Length: 190
Image (tube, rainbow, N blue to C red; front, side, top):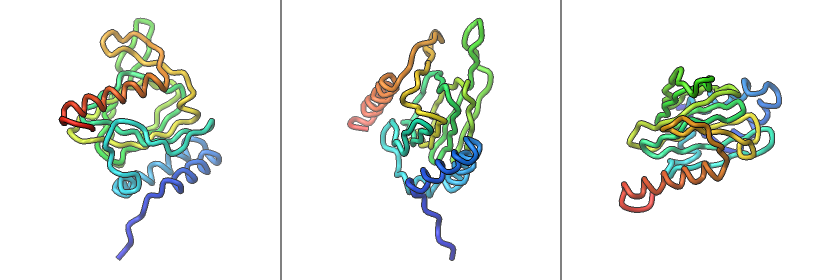
């Protein structure tokens, strides 16, 4: 009987770094796709998400890798990354609206629903908003072609679609509010 493959975070990071050095983000996408093709192994290796936030696997000037966790029915406003990005879902679902920043303002132009095992590549100029439509947590591995946490980015107000600055503090506050919302729904800590 074949033994199930195990996901080891250190090995995954090493494989991503080697692939990035050899073939850039296209090669890293192959490593990510292979990992989340066995999404149950990734879930076993990283653990079940229990709160909104990031589990950082690697933070370097060349590459940032983290597991992002969305609470049930969490929504992230339109935002950019200012670098190429990969997303691979290992539990739950992530719905993306892709936007264009046009002279007359931000306009939605397409959508993508990511299910367990799916991987998507976002180009440097991508703007997207994210929703978890499920009544359970979503977890995805996010890989960025650079230092995600040190890069100045933008977000767009969800009501007015006005462009606003975004940084690590802004994102951490958004996740904290989401965890408070979740705790209020559950009658205690998330």
